[in-house]
Image 1 (cartoon, rainbow, N blue to C red):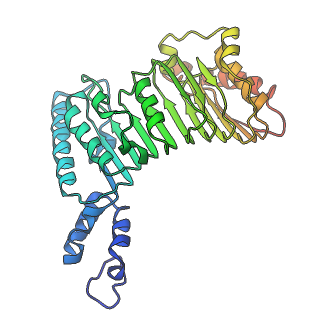
Image 2 (cartoon, helix red, strand yellow):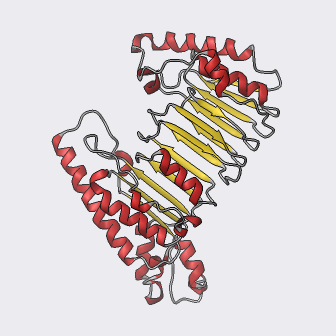
Length: 362
């Protein structure tokens, strides 16, 4: 019937060891796991030992940034942010776990919340966190939170347990990324979304454990060089300045160019510059490639040719030629524009993609 019955003969759940019960509770939301404290005296503190803390602001998915705010809405959101900070502090004060498998902060916070955010990160690091996500969305009139220098200390053993890092709407710099690559030997997943501090980024190293990499919508990014022997999945939202090195284990790649890239005035690179930017290296595991937007750019066309020439076991090419261009064309001309772009993309790819490779034009 979906009800946990305590003290009855058919209550098999309560017969389980505390370690297993805590692991089960770790997959529930904090509110759901906290409710179990009323079941019996044994359950009172079990939820406080959870190994996964998902600290997500209630209703956060609906609190998205828009260009227009009513004054009342702004006040409500600021009050909500303050309440969120107090709520997280209370949760961490109650939490008794010694190890954290996952620690997630998702809220509308910015630089003005530097002290509590840094304090929460210190809390997670002290508990040998495995997966760390900092997903912020600061107010349109406030600056982004950036990792303070005193937090990133070379040789700090607290970083050795980290396997996954996600930074969304956080000002992460090249030095920050380099620090994590050097001090997190177990790091397999790195996601950076919308960081204004990245310009010339290198993710290279023969001993990197990195398997999943996403560098997305970092609009000031001028160049990205990637060489990681274990990388299997790669998502990048730029074509210009993309330097592809040693990626022998690559299985899937998604390359995107959004309308913001068009509007930012990015100039396509010359053929010679693009030729120098791509290192010819065969890929024996890459089976699926997706290209989105950016058509007409020399850098994209050269990158497409590189992929087709070097992917030995390629099975599928997905093309979304109209991705990111919806804001550039008047609505009356949108259908004609999209149809024209699709025809050109189809001509370009059909002439290049081998017949044994499935071609999908979205």
